[in-house]
Length: 234
Image (tube, rainbow, N blue to C red; front, side, top):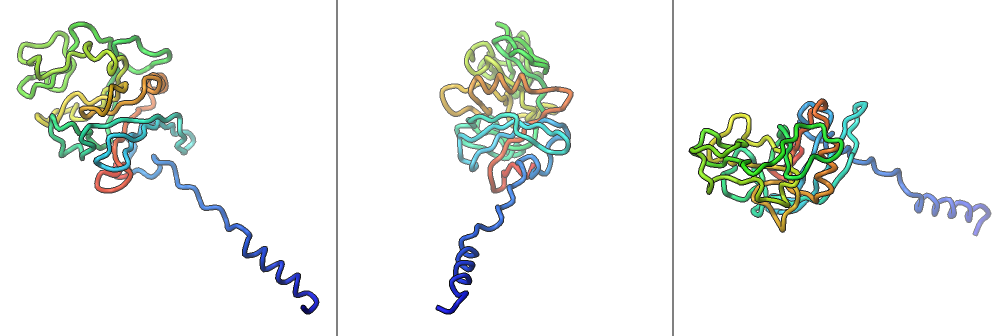
């Protein structure tokens, strides 16, 4: 081997083995979304695909123009997966995808310490009307009105686990469309998949309510990792 050849070979080996520049990390999920509601707090509820019944809920803060993760937890969705909110039908056990406001919270238990959002206590006569023929469709009622059948409504106090703490999701809420669905909440996990709501462990639900600041206009985005119901579309 001629003089200097060993040095050249050693240098070449170093070039081959030297790692390349680290990949640029992907922007946080809210930064990749088409819309986040205009506030500085956001909850994302993402499933891997439309037929999934589980995924992840993450809550985010926007500070100095950057979204940062405040917390995350495992999530459950409808027993029949997720569907575009505008196409959803009542009674299909699907979770509606889309971007929604969060009108208020409620619960059988007292509001977690630090809760600033409006929090309604559940009483014995608290109902959520899901009767398509009622003037109170998709509304909290106390007591249940005569035109809202009990069999077409939820007696909130009966769901001692799920509604220990809950947050109303503004799906089909501002101007309800009959037969699209009623009573879609972010609430505490029950035994399995939901009837269309998003659920999380109890400690995560308490953390979300203590974190949410109405002055920062929190919203929730529900969707999948890709496809027609991808969360980044909302």
